Image (cartoon, rainbow over all chains, first blue to last red; front, side, top):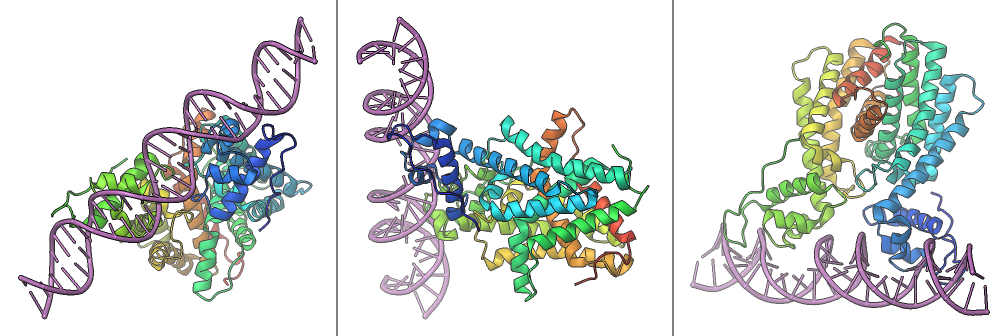
Length: 219
Length: 219
DNA sequence: GGATTGATCGTGACGGTGTCAAGATGTGCG
DNA sequence: CGCACATCTTGACACCGTCACGATCAATCC
């Protein structure tokens, strides 16, 4: 599990940090990693960033605001990785598999971001920047499913399939530790996140591509 | 959204409630519904149950213990509903659709339980009773997928398909409010949770049943 | 260079929290 | 009736989020 860079030291006097918002986001990620979301606190973030307890409030409003900023960062990282993973792959089915792998890399390399991204109970869910960031990541997936429909099956219900993939991914990232624990309990070789994603992609897409004319009409 | 029964009044003196554990679970559900998980507190639960702030600690150890008890209750309710939904349906594909509907009913009728059931950050994830309760619900789904393999496609990778369905369900329950918000933004008729489940089940199962001999061999 | 304004902090206070210890009360059994 | 245990209440402590107020720094203008 890769840790983010430690918070930057202030570049000026004690009353002008220089880049406190970024340092606070980095500290927030550290606190999530070490204490979980339930143990998360603004004061601990402030301590790690080397400022007073009220400083985060000035930049982010409150604890929701800071966590929302971390979630936005996570979605932007995810979108960038999905775009990068799928770049240069002509076959859209292969591209879907590749962006599945991209999602896995983000989940492994940015676990704190992933932990917070879908937690509406601690986020400012009505924040337009959060909605836009989430949609940015989702749109990469949806565009890939649309390309599959164009190439293989014009009747593929693109919105439904994209939502199915997005829901599955989100659910899997959260349930993966439980599946690993279950495999261990049954003394089976644990299935990695990567492997789960590969198999799920095969199960969803290979079947859909072949059943032309049998899905519900595209809405 | 249906509220749980209000906490029972003590049946004895102030130092012997009579059935405090159940009253505390009911109050916990109320607090989750009214304040969300982030606003949840033991003292608020104690106030609503009409006892002192330290009483919950005696029965549940700490805040994790109480939320774990609520999650166990949720999984047991889910298992019972999945069993009831699939009872008497001979065709396992229809049975899978029916238990999908059962999951939806639990999500709608017990939103507080659903909100807490997969939150490993606030639960005692190593509690054997929690693992057993989760496995109980999951096993109903897995048995149904196994029956589909028996009837329609002996090469269906049962564990993978069951995990795919479970992950999808979990992800969808969490993402449904975002999908509804997205539909509203695009001025489309919002897709209900029920409708999403029906479509996802069709997409996953109908395709898989038809592609005999083309999935990975069962592990 | 000094004054002014706004940005960016620190300090202190308040009410709420979780958890622990000690003690008070109630129940059941011999 | 006494005892042991269960089941609470009370009080304390450290930590929390948030707010108000004030201190300091940077940039701009005259």
